[in-house]
Length: 234
Image (tube, rainbow, N blue to C red; front, top):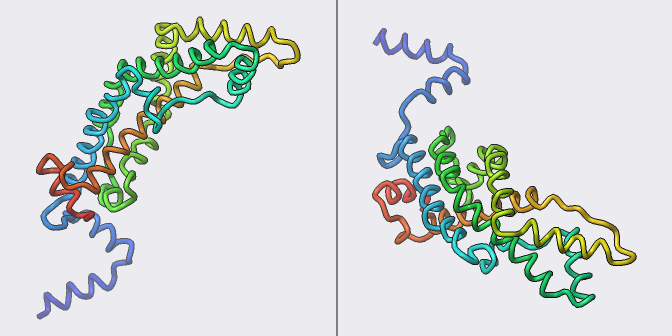
């Protein structure tokens, strides 16, 4: 009895924050699934997104014919596009749009290992919260943790891809012709920056597609880990 009273006195002397710290150090589980397993399941879902969905982007027309991620022209180049069509250079304008998407398709092929390594390096400290969050919560966590770093790694790949698919040459011709048209204001867009940003958005979009499938479609949970983890949010 004295022992129980002593424990009660100790607990009453502890602050709420101290009690919370103790609780945080205890193993947490729901239906036998630990936070570490949840984190592993979320990483696996992102890996599947890269393997099943992002690889589609690396195929010819992977960006260009996918309305979810197709790279459109930025506002500055939209006026270039319209002006070229107005003066009978519609074919050149079409080619300019296509090569931007071709560059993204080529670059994602080269950069896929970057995304794989990024997912491996993620520690989901808030795994349970992410699991029970929005249908793209894990993807958005990935965006927040990796976008700046991936941009720095991805931009040189995009620059090389723009050159490789002939986009630099084509757009140099487009810009030169546009700037030579009377009454137009000269433009000099940073194509590498724009395509890099758009390609990254496309990659994250496709990863989110797979995450949503795993969250909402039981048949998409193709491993025991995914079944155990994502059953918690059903």
